[in-house]
Length: 310
Image (cartoon, rainbow, N blue to C red; front, side, top):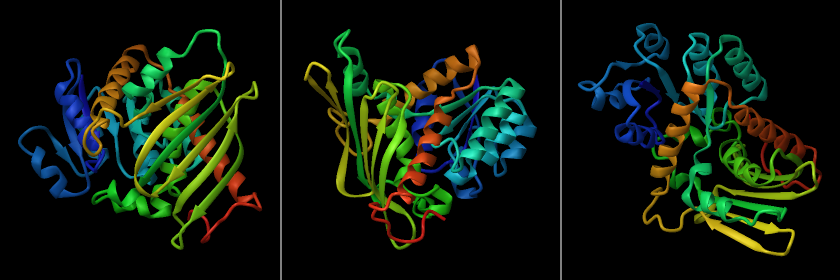
């Protein structure tokens, strides 16, 4: 299958590496508004500066979208309208209304809409899931997603624009963290949230408490000002047992865990292309992001700095 990649920012390299190593998938075209980003691919595949030209040219079986967050909805809606299967980086969109429109259009066109939650493919997370004792309920889950965002964004400075990013750590890292908690607890709803924002309106830290229908609890801790990097999951069982997965353990070097995670993303995307259907977990995570912002802004104990997320 020939896969197009729209957006050649810091995350695209993981998709491109996975495509080079994938048997059933190969790179079919690239698209970016910046000529310098396209330059390395000029002699390899068709290169486009407008995603609408990529669509019109045809010849692709599916597309990966890894443009800035605020462009997800616009690009994906055009692709879905053309009937192309889409794998989009989390978050699905920056606004819940746009996510709903994307899911509705995918259903109308019979197109695949797949959200990339790369952390669910982490080897340490998969081991933790597989090793949980059968018949022992999960009582609570804690997910920590702590980093200094400036160390991660490279030239993609849009992460630090609350409008383009969608808010900050809640909008961008929240979906991955919520997805991890949901792997262990199923569907969740927000019970309480606190968000700390800087003077530009970017949320830099957040603590979010969630619960499932059975009363099991999850706490998600997000930080974009952390001196270093911590990504882990802690699971407390009803029998008192405590299990933990360090997502970075065993992966020497900065961002090294992402290579195998994005290979997992593309494996599942290839499967989804064949089986069809819409991944509604992307919409569920976006709904939790929306609920987090609403809960924090209505919480008198939330320590808010600035004027919201734009």
